[in-house]
Image 1 (cartoon, one colour):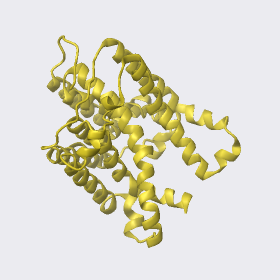
Image 2: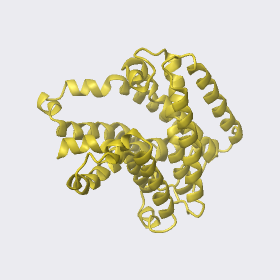
Image 3: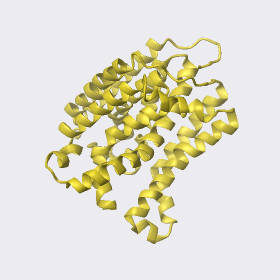
Image 4: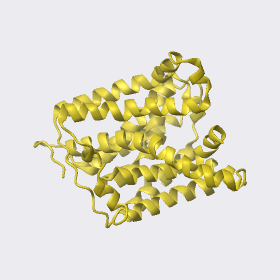
Amino acid sequence: MQNATNGSRPDPNQILIGGLILYASSFALLLRNKSFDAAGAGVVLVVFGIVFPLIAWIATRRAIPLSISVTSGKSQLIVLIGYIIVLSVYLVGGPQWIDQHLPSSWIDSARAKFFITLAKKLIVFVAIPFAIFRFGFGYRLRDFGIQCEGLRALRRSHLPVVLVVGGVFLAFQYFLSGGGAAFRHGHFTAYQLLLSLPLCFIWLFVEAGLVEEFFFRALIQSQLAAAFKSEVSGTVLMSLIFGLAHAPGFIFRHAGEVEGLGSNPSALDAVAYSIVVLAISGVTFGVIWARTKNLFAVMLIHAAGDVLPNFAGFAQTWL
């Protein structure tokens, strides 16, 4: 059950329309960048912004959302926004700075780096924000969708969305994504697949599923949905924040070169790309969270979507 403070709030349709206008403006801005792949961005919009969210909505028609308690107040929003800003700054160079102060034997070990990376993510995306909202505002684990009832729901009304959307993600990655090319071409042995694929899935269930879904869906989206009294508003605003959190990396860490923006994209191009491509990728999970409030469900689906693209690196490190 969600509680929100009284007072006028923007119409959810206004926020949705505003998000669409911001997307269109960002897309138009990026068309000036010769490195921008407009066709690829169009595919992302159709697949991750329309088709997958629609499938998620259909698969959750009979889903019964878990009962969580989310209160909304100015102090909570100020703390949340402040932490997002601090986190965005940290992501620019913080992880690299930490690595520089760790023993070189740890950094030189690929296996040790797996655990170091996981520890850093769990601390900044899960442990610290949970502690802030637990001890500062009285939240419990169940208010973030971590409930025994959530496990039981995976056998009942939440099972269809996990199977359907998780299966769709796997099929997309296998047949249409570069992440599935190695599987299509038979680059892995049966031994590697039988042993490492389940382990890789379990790893991503925590490393990607828990980290991202806790922070962006269970925390940010829930807070924004309560503040604006609208799941639509919460999903739209969460997706924008999810995308914009990556913008500093494009500007300061040359991540734009990997994403096809060039080695030194302007601040406007970095922000626009974050909205056009990365923000869209969070919509499907936002829909699932809004209709289930089950963190375990979105963690499972997230791991399913990431397992094929990440399997080669996992197998190379651990086999």
